Length: 615
Image (cartoon, rainbow, N blue to C red; front, side, top):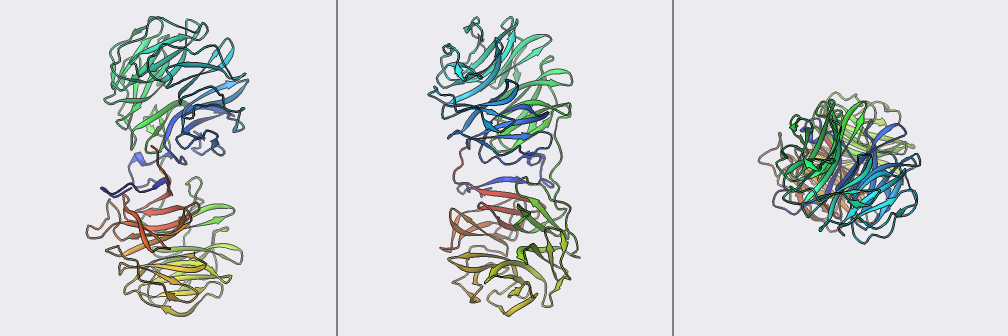
């Protein structure tokens, strides 16, 4: 998060654990790189899935049983995907997407491939898509800023007839239903009206449905006591239910207490229900028979912009998306999020590193719970059980290739450094014992083909070790005036460097080959610097440092500067404003793709550098 009063920092959260945080931070589908604007559900090969369209121009498919992504993102539009609907065409489950670039695309959800090219002919953004069956043909119904509703044959990929007209402003949402045996489309608009069209005759049915006092942004359909109904909502903060046969409003409006941006229907505990979401950061469930709210609102961390409903393992669920980029899955019977928080450490995380194991990028985290954990960077899930062996808190971790093996080195308050084979998850040999005080930090690198470890600790010195021979090289490097708390290595302009952070509040840069200090220390922190990582963003080598006490939550030191800072190693200047986290930051590690692993409190998060945020 950015520090209050400072410009927005260009980092976003890919995934995070939630062992110590509130429920709204837990149980999200992770991987979206932009704001999520639309979601729908389908069944593919017997599995319930969510199909999610994003402002980054991608469509992602998630298995709602496992919570994991299905295949790679579907790409095609050059601009944001604004609408998604699903259908079955010639026995195949497909997704139909509409984009801000004016295209409609069809995707085969079994193969993950586009079903032909984009459907041409639109000159404005596609705001909403719904599907139906007309005369035995699967069709898509689309709306946009041109005030028209268009119908497309999904087999021939041709528009059917002329557009449906009547609305005087942009048509934000469309839904389909069957009334008296005939397929109909229901559109909602900025003109505060709801219109119904017969999809067979392509004629408007009766006069518009009126009653809303501001833009109508969402519409869905259901069956209540045998009657087809439309449920509408928008900026006037109320939800209205309409009998599509009599064209009359049913009962009094339901009060959502804020503008409603998303709407869906389902069945909860045997009763037809509406699920609404919007600007108050909540998702609300309504019994359409009694017109009463069911349970307490379900919370997001930001306004909710899309939702869809489906059934998973016999339970009705809602899939909701938010401006916080989280996608959450809710069991509507129990009124709880599905699953539990990602298992994590049971105490503070003090170190992090990244590497490749069996071709998979992983993160390693160490904690005062005396363990090291391995995390799959693609899913954010732990790999196996925690690695144990140290007799005290594990303060530092680093990785290196040793005789072709991917290994990790860990340092602990038990005064040992241990080497771990990350493939077999076993300790290699006996631990190395430190005789000159505690080892707080370790980093690794390759110099002239030799794997080296750089360590620091309570004696304020920096030592360089030959990992193969298990001996330190030369005399310790001096310059810091207090404990060396953290070390990272990198290469800048062809030179292998070590960057060290100390309780003396400074960050120093060392040439590992010449064993000399480079330039003046980096200053800015006003208290102990306890974590450091290196990464590359847009071709620039960066160092990221954290000060002791960094964090806005429990455990933060009121006298510490409590910041995470980013430094350009070429210019030796700080970049952008400092960052803060909910708990003190004790661990940082660079990850592939300019990403950053952060250990804060007992949590772990993966951040990505964002060139542009378009929420």
